[in-house]
Amino acid sequence: MPLQPHHDGSARYVPEQAPSLGDTVDVFVRVPAGTDVRQVHVRTTGDGEPRFVEAVVDRTDGDEVWWRAPVEVRNPVSNYRFLLTGAAGHRWLNAAGTVEHDVPDHGDFKLVSHAPPPAWTRDAVIYQIFPDRFARSVAADGRTLPDWAIPCDWDTPVIGRGPETPHQLYGGDLDGITEHLAHLDRLGVNTVYLTPIFPARSNHRYDAADFDRVDPLLGGDAALARLADAVHARGWRLLGDVTSNHTGDAHRWFTAAVADVHAPERGLYYFAERTGRDDSRSARLTPRGELEPSYDSWNGVPSLPKLNWGSAELRRRFATAPDSVLRRWLREPYGLDGWRVDVANMTGRRGADEYTHEVAELLRTVVTQTRPDAVLMAEHGHDHTGDLDRNGWHGTMNYVGFTDPVWSWLRHGEQPVPNFLGTPGGVRRRDAGAVLETMNSYRSLVSWRSYTHSWQLLGSHDSARIRTVVGDAARHEVAAGLLATMPGTPMIFAGDELGLTGGTGEGSRTPMPWHRPECWDGGTFAAYRALLRLRRDEPALRHGGLRWVHHDPDTLVFLRESPDGTVLVLARRAAGGPVRLGGLPAGENLYGGAPGLRPDRGRAVTLPGDGPTFQVWRLR
Image 1 (cartoon, helix red, strand yellow):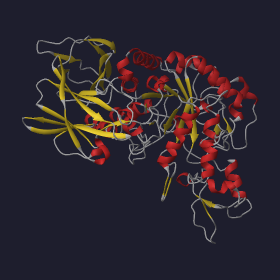
Image 2 (cartoon, one colour):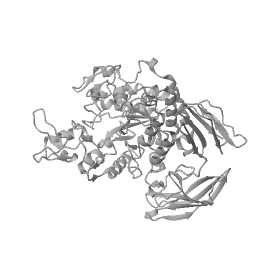
Image 3 (cartoon, one colour):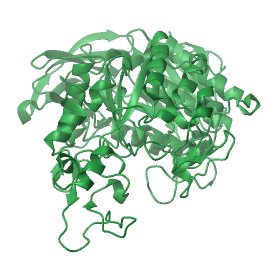
Image 4 (cartoon, one colour):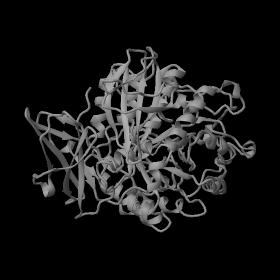
């Protein structure tokens, strides 16, 4: 895989990272010596019409030629790509790489003039906590449990699938989290993300019964204020989780809507008024044998009635009112630093209703008006590319462009791990070439800014644990290495750093074994800690571009390049032959213990062939 002409949206190639509408910015193409490129044009599509401008040679840097061309930020999202001309003809360079055939515009590079995400997010390391399973404070012992709960001791096995699954209650609370922040500090994270904290009738709390108070089982509003104070005292950030697609059927909005067809809450949901026949999969009988109203719900689950974003009253209550759901928790004494939005992909979508993009923009406007440095992150479990770069979500949880390809490359054996993304047949086994194609396919359809501000994750409370997927500590280290060194914001699900296991989303919601440190995988914790420290210490790993330089079925090699330095990363899932790469300088090993890199007489460096392994070098 010889070095190819390269461009991405990072600062080495687009020095102006936050352009305004109407600006003209310079963009650069890097062409290795000996490449058949004699002329370069940039193609833009301002106002929908293609235009070409010839690039000029800006400088020669060692064995590379850097071409420069101007691009006008004509539209809020301005597309551009490069036409490379050589003796053999023409090639395109777009966000997916170089190709010899014509390509549609949606794969072009993108300059975005919408207000950028808050600057702190590029340096964030997210730690996801499922509150019921993280830690119990002493106060938890004195709380009266609701009738739906199945009380569990901290060592009670999690029921991964069945009617009891959402009702097992272990009693974790917010003060318990506050008491264990030192663990997060040792690990090296700086942002805490809580799954929902509002009252509900389940342990996961995605079926909110109220948005105006914190669940008393978690310690109530005062416990959230204490946690926020403790998190912010460390200079960290605290994120909440809100359901914009649905509420629970015990929510006061929904109960009011069911009780009175003339109630203002009726318009907050999708009700099918009775015509004498049952025309909804969500219809059911009351305890008195009466037919309940028919309404839409998330995936047909009656306990999760779907919100109707065509309702002005919903928009007021949820977003725009002075004391709306979004606003009140961003303010003191809680001061959340933003929201992760559950089921963002379905929010505002229902049949002919298509409010998703305007709702995303509304929520972002309200969040940033309330807290200019707050973040708004969307959950997408599948293709997110059509919903980003629209002045709405700052980014997404990148399951399809990171989690799934990493799983499929590092998957161990034939264990029955269902694929979180819903594809029948479980996790496919793929070689590095297919993994790289998958990553590039999704990355190339969004701006560099949206890609690098999205969360990269190895798993979550909704998926199998990475340790179960990969099978052993060695491959787990490779996965953690990719998480720490690839572009984007790393998100760690609490317990992954200890090597906890789980084969389904619910089965992975494992209580943290604070009282049994002998069962922790100390080696995995040390690897996470060292990798996160490396990410913190190397600017290229947080702000650099991404250039793939080699792959074979068991190997991925890439560069992270920034104005402050360059890092070379080697990830192997199995042992193989050494990899010889030309055109690279000497390098000092920063992680993994391999020897330093020394170019031979042919000006090539050789990477070791052992594996599984994860190695990082800083290039000179």
